[in-house]
Image 1: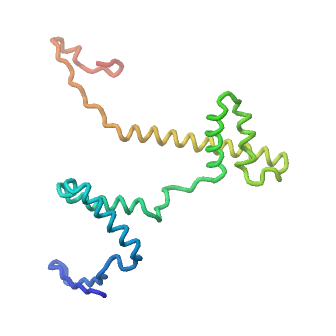
Image 2 (image 1 turned 30 degrees about the horizontal axis):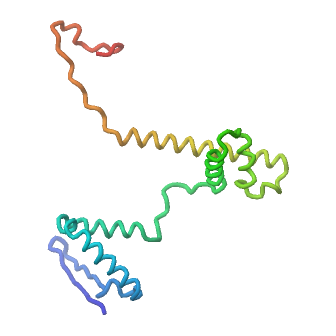
Amino acid sequence: MWLCVVTTRSAYPYFVLMIIRRSALSHFTSDIRKEIADFARNLSKEHRGLFTSDPTLRKRAGQFLTALLPPKPKRRGRPGIQSVTIAIRLRHRLKRQFPSERPAKLWEWIYPKAIPGYSRLSELEQGDARQQLRERVRWRQRDRKRHKALEGIVSKPAPAPQAQKATGNRATNMLHPFTSN
């Protein structure tokens, strides 16, 4: 069943026509409708005081539930290269399993698993692929460190300027570019 709503705005001379479905849940199966209703009832029973004290929390709870359900939005930026992602995860896991092992030995275990078709490559191509993989891993980890450092700088508020002490000598109160007062 459909419901038509016609509204006018006094500032604008045109009409806005909206068509609204009677039941927003009509395209769900009855099992999903029951599960959502049970979840809402339980949530309202357990946290009734919280929702009545701040009505905006109801909307926020719905937004949070929406954020948890698929499909999730794609991450910002260019997608990572799969071989680099695999290499970083394997390297992290192997470093924890074998802390006394040399890094070169760990990389020897990583190459065949991270580089697609590694065994079919010639010796020269394998060397190029190994070098390229290690560079890309280094670049991604360097960028991640830089982004984390920038997040720390941006999120921290600037310290408040401190008032200088006034002394009797006017010459010592003046700021000098090469000394700290």
